Length: 308
Image 1 (spheres, helix red, strand yellow):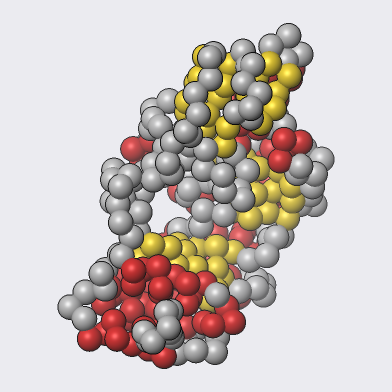
Image 2 (cartoon, one colour):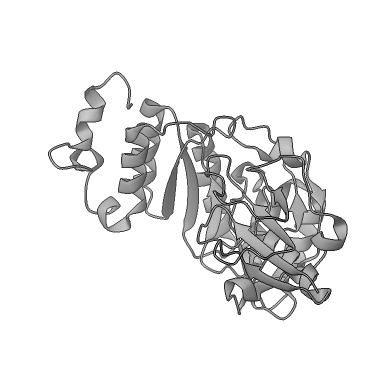
């Protein structure tokens, strides 16, 4: 029996799927698996998983084999199949009612800010919804483009007939929503709402069309949109436009360069994201009147050559 240590280097509130599968595999062998503690370093092996390149590395070393994986360490490294096909050990995060997984991997788009095409390539079938959900009634799915593959549509059809609620937390490509796919998405039971990507102004007409089609076929919820922040002037115009759509719940994300772990996020991106993502502020305070720091109103950014 081995003693296995695991490290979620990013330490976000979102569970690390790879670590849950690693824990499940080692427990199936009779090994002891625990979150590492630098004070008790008698491990036979330690796994470290890092999703984001900008996350600082784990500062401690152990006198045993230390295996590092995840996009933050290596784009090409994957879990071996005998671990990857494990049912995740949700107990390490105390998760009791929700399942996590991917139905498909990859994406056909080649957005310059996205690491998925480099890491996973074109979309391919990966798992079945029944294999992921098991006896759980809520499922968080992390597919990057579920509508880009016929297999994905087949899985959505299957989901629509099951007694589960789902969330595609990476966003759905609104450009691929037509009458057929809108009718299918409207039949799915959502945990909260449908998420769509809106990283460019050019996507707004597709989002508006998608919403019209979704409501036409019976969807009654709001639409959550992911909005990437990079170009200052374009993003200000997009923010103001989306704010006028009562059915849009926007979430703004500062642009992260995966090839530059030492990137400094411009202050205007941090301020804009804070304003937009705090609903009490977003719904009551105009952007130009927002005061992110004492004595500095956001409107002053409009007089600058850039938002740095």
